[in-house]
Image 1: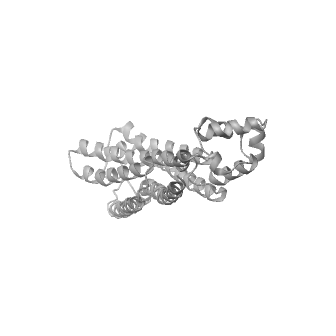
Image 2: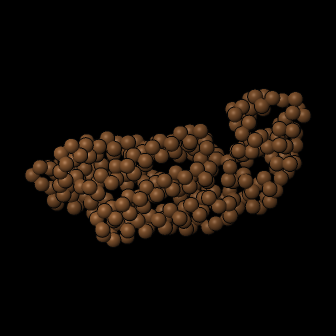
Image 3: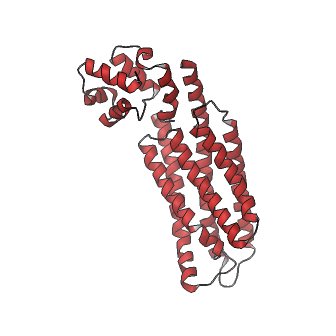
Length: 287
């Protein structure tokens, strides 16, 4: 019998409703319903409270097979304070992407209306980034919502981070195909490697070493920051009469904001990978 079935059986034996159990545990009735249908698992502290309240041992409530799924279906971050920090960081990333769209969108509209392209900020390469930037803004807002709901498990992290990296791979590939140069592909390869490593770590339940995630995320942050610094000097040293240095800085800010956002996501991914690795190790000992 699986955890959800055992929970439902023990609850009914005590003559409790889902709402009664939820009120005692200070959770919603929907949370209890998800536990019983097997789509979610409570965190370890809540599991102990359930066992104490139903007057059974944790071993009676949770079988060896269930322990394998606990680390994958419960939220990665269980502490309320830490979860709020996670939500705040996702919120900052979302705000920066939305702000970046607000800064650069008028330039895109001007280019499309005038059908002219200059060497400073108004290139077709920039237009390629409009759709990925919109997708990143949407996934950032989605990450905030899921973090508030405490739904950020390993697969959710793979989804959020995967969309970030996948959009970059798509952008660099499109630029490379359009310009018929290999520079875009050289930029896409590190992004693709990072994407594969992160998906393999978070999607699979095996006890993988998180150091691979630490390394690729660190490299990604270093490359992104280096590119932004190069872009700043390039733009600052080549303003035209039509575009002042103040406008150049505005364009640069529109380019560096997603770098900061991506750095936040990469740092969160490193922290989350460490927690997931620890949980998988702990659950493996209980099987």
